[in-house]
Length: 502
Image (cartoon, rainbow, N blue to C red; front, side):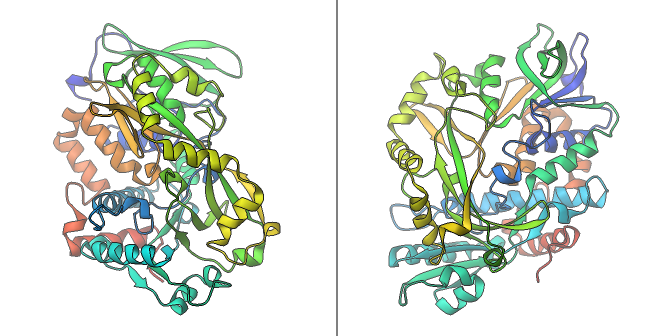
């Protein structure tokens, strides 16, 4: 690390990572590749890595590349479809695939089939208004090379060929439309995360501690950070000192950011949203569906609640899920406390949180309706995508918690952000990741942004620049504006990750 990052005073580690999820794993691996001599300590309150938001059951599992997620391409008041966010997310997923390809080539993680599989991404809608929207979305996306392989159809027989179950039993003459991208993927972020941590903990000067909870963190006068840690098994407490701290604790990041007391963290709040899946238990039905089919979200629904009929690979076995159904809990983590939300309310964020609540009454109404749903209500929602669905073939599975970001806004007082937010101290000595979707899929780009904020001088050195370009060959270039580079990059990563076109 450069002179800027060096501090006066004794430290136990160069870097402390809080939370053993996909974000900490990605940052840890990046830093060790860029600076092999770094000492890193990782702390996780649970007994296994990736047990919260990164876990297969708690994560959408979609390689979020904006191929099928309609919430990334909103229709504006003038009727045009906005694709800026979709293009950005598609770019970022290509960056993730390049980084994972590097890890596979270097033998730093195991067989890619353990975490990534090829699966078509589809958008499916019905009704004239939605069909018109999907056609406009398709036309807009066709202007970008990242989406040039997308197929569009309003032909029911073609849709039936793509995903037979969603057409079986549907009313004849119903106007439908679908898009399909064969380049889509299913990603088990839990498996990928654990793979990366297995590699990290084998490296010199890296220590990984499970069943350890961070109780407090404070900046010392010498610029280092003191972290109070409790061993949940023995009850022992100790203090650790580091030059840089990353808070990547999912829903648990906000309370720790508040404890850090950095000015940049003031005014942030969190709105927790829980989720549930309907999981198919009928092997015959599971075997008939091979796609991730996304539809349009209900009015007021958070992005994580965009309905989808979803083929997944979990623990090496094909699964079929529908959902997620949203809910509300005051917990910030699936394994958290019901006091998480009340405890997060501080004097500096109460106004933004109240303002955000007043401006999102549709969301509140939607969540109340979701919480009150009966099994029959959930079945009716499923039947919109699977007309012949029967309750006996499905069971309820609880998904993870997501904490949506609430931040100060000069005009509205406070706004609810559906995305991820990196918050860092001005001196780059600490950073926290808040928020949710598309999170895991874009983890590499998020962490590269963090490096630019917190390790800026290091990042500009020829050594770091060369290494990053080795890991991510298109670093600094835009695939959306270079057709040949886009195709060549996808061809290379698809081969390495074993997700070539069929």
